[in-house]
Structures are given as C-alpha cells and as structure tokens.
Length: 434
Image 1 (tube, rainbow, N blue to C red):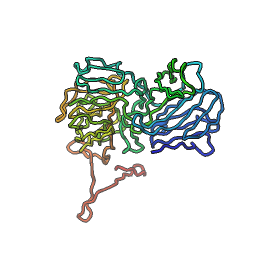
Image 2 (image 1 turned 90 degrees about the horizontal axis):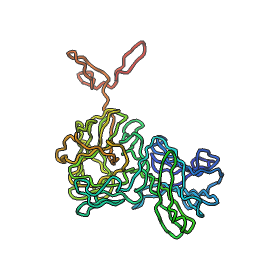
Image 3 (image 1 turned 60 degrees about the vertical axis):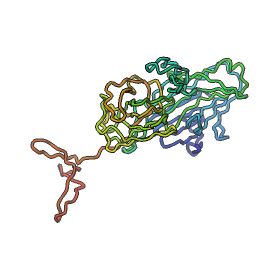
C-alpha cells in the first residue's frame, strides 16, 4: 500500500498522511496559515497522539517534492514522509533532519507533547539478562541476542530496537470493534520511536543515542562522526506506525509455558478470541489462547481452540467455541500456551505484573497458573470481545427468588410468537421494559 501526502484541508498550508482508520499524521502545526516544522502522530482518532516539534521562530514555506514535505532552512532541512514496510522496518513515519554543516552541539532536541500514552525504554539485552539465567539455560548474552547451550537464539532485540522507545496506550488493550464506537487497541501499542541512525554524504552510518524525558526527545550524535563526516548528514528519528502494532523484541515462549498480558476492559461482554503475534520455531506448532481472572485462575470457558502457528511473524487468532464472560473494570489476563517452544514478541520496561508467566503448566489440560511469576515485559497478546447478549430487563418472582426473564411469547390463534417489545405507562409516559 502506498501512503500519500495530501493537503490537510483546502486552502491550508498543512499536510496529512493517512495510514489506516486508527492512524494518521498531520504535518505543519496548529496554524493553517503558517507552516511549522512539526508533526502530530494520531492514534485511535484523537484519543492518543504525539506532537513532535523542532523549535524555530522562522516562517518558511515548505516544498512538496520526491514524495516528501521539505522544510528548508539555511543550515538544516527537515523532511517529513511515510515509510513503507520493509524486511527490517515496519510501516513508519520519518522526521528526517538534514544538517548541512557541522553543528555547534552533538545534540538535537525536539519538543514532545503527548496524550494518553506511556513511553518504555528498550535497553540492551545485557541489562536484565545474564549468563546462567533460566536455570543455566542462557550461556551467551550480547546487546542484541541471548543464546542457549545449543547455540539457539532464545531472545532477540534488533539493533534499531536497542536504545529505542516503545509507546503504548496508557490503559487500554483488546479489540472492542463489535461495541458501539468500539476500537481495536490490540496489545495497546501505539508507536515505536526507533534508535536513531546518522548517515553522511558518503554513506557512513553510525548509531546515535535517544533519550526522552519531561517532554524533550534528545538525539546524541557521536562526536567522532560529527568531526569526520562528509556533509550534509542525515539524522533519522523514525516513528514506527505499523497498524499491526506488535512488540519489537522476540523470545521463545517455552513448552507448556503460559504467558499472558494484563488488561482492564471498559465494557462488559463475551470473549471471542485470543490473538498472539508469533512465528513458529520447532514442531509441533500448536497454540491455545487463555483468559485468566484477576486471581490468575482460568475463566469459565477461558481456553480457546487449538491453532497452528505459521513460519512468518504475524497475528494468529485462536477462537472460543463458547467465550468467557467479561465484566467491565475487572482485571483479566489474555495470553496462551504452546505445545512446543515458539517465538513470541514483546516490549520491555513495564511494571511488575503487567504480564505474567507460568513455566510449569500443561498444554493438553491447562491448569490455573495461580503461582505464575510477574513480568515487566509487555507481551503481544490481546483478546477480542463482543457485547453480552441483552436480556429483557424483566424479572419474575418464583418462590421468593427473582429470576431474569430471557424471552416473552404470546399465543395468538394457538401459535406462539415472540414478543419483541413491551412498554409500560408511568405517569402518562410510555417506557420500554424490553
């Protein structure tokens, strides 16, 4: 799919990029008559957003060329454009800074304003994993991978994820599209701010450092690169905007492991399915979804059908034959269990208990993982819900016990017919009973 840059509105100096119904970028700031080097990355309408601003007092009219919006100043340029999905990078938005000569400082500072989001730093794997972990299973750890005794990579964090930020909805996860005005939040991930890379005019590439704090996003460029690069140089703050919105790191799920991510639904309803972002590792490739109560017991009807995971990383969906009942504002965990070790995806940096894992369960007959361990990882799992079936709002008293009336029929000419509506007159006002 080719993403197009279009005018935000007629007679407007600003632009927009439409990614999908939940994702859109507005370029140019808040004033339709004065373009500023800013971008507003919107997610789920205006429910969540990041505003990225390069401070300036200059009034410069941008150019639209080569599929980009280009803001050109004397010593630097800023290019705004969408990135299509590649093997190394999901769908993204580029806020590309071009330095035409050596700057006075090796830091580029952008102002950040956000709404409804949390930022999670993704450190090197050497922070948090060490040789000897998992009962001696881990024998080698670098910034980007951890290996087991057989030389298998059991945890992987790509170079552009190390030192980056995963950005999530501050509270929501799950798919509620079946509800009125409902949205699909998936695992709750909105964006990913990738580790910045610098490239000089001869193609020399180096990694920079990224730091977000108190509304400032700071990119630090290696001083040696600034001193010896051939100008102009490109600095690429890239914002991942993938509609699939999954974790940036991967690890093996573990045979008979249950892993699950915490969520608190806004609506009551019924579970339809559990989704996992995964790819298969070794045969067999079977997965079952699991929904857990807040006490980590398996919900009634909380185990979904067995599915087979594919070789490509993607969202895989396991449906319930009869789904679990979900109550609004209660805590649940959506996750799953595999019959052999498969890869799952996640982001680091959450709070203890945002996810849980149980390493001693049983795929054939899953048991309550009440002794599960807390995890700070944000697993790429989510549940899909549908509204609960509506009753009649009528009750009948039988033996001093009030019971719901699920259905009303009337006999007309010895034929029973469903009653679709009952009203009662209260104070000359007709009110619907059901």
